[in-house]
Image (cartoon, rainbow, N blue to C red; front, side, top):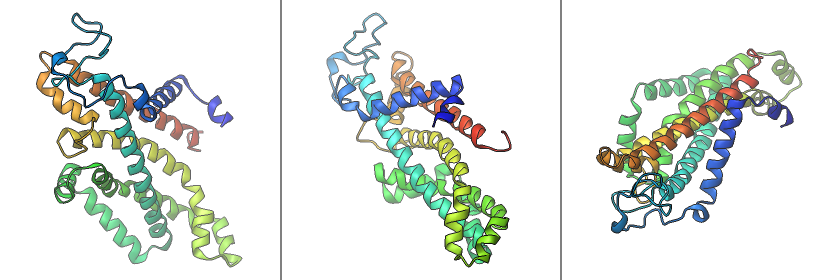
Length: 278
């Protein structure tokens, strides 16, 4: 940890501070949000931000067309985006990594089946596949996670398989076979630890993609609809761009800054863990 902190550059440090602040806001959203994010008050509808004439500090970022506080919706929206992204990355990373390990190590028909499934899925546009799955499952928190997992495990499977193919013929693996270790022990005890760094870097970068995909599905009306999310806020705000720009600007800015921070952090992790760059 001390070595990682010493290698932090200013860009990575700013990204870490922003993401930690966002995580804290998501965890303590009930205490930080000044209003109920779904509470409506038509008497203050389309109230501008506090620094514009007509705005008040009671609603620092203004209100939407139903009088709901934008700042409170942003705080609660961070919880939805981060939780969905975290679970989707964890499950898809675990499933894809295991399939990549097994197919790369054993090869044969298992590798052929996994790779052909990867090729078929990569040939289908994400939105088309998401529409098909969500039309069957219906929108909702759990179903969004299932769709994101079903469409993103392929990236981990391809990465891990390619690395396992290069590692399984190394001398330390041959030595483990020579002393009589079983294949599964060799795979998970001696090969898997050598691909963990690559999986962590990929998972960090995929978090940004998960946030974007969740926001896109919510924008299209296929995501979580019964609570405040950044995608839903964007969808509602696009009708008021001429006279209430803040409805779409602030959720769009939140998505942009979050994705940028995650990508910058992922690039930094890749730079400090890749031996070729070192």
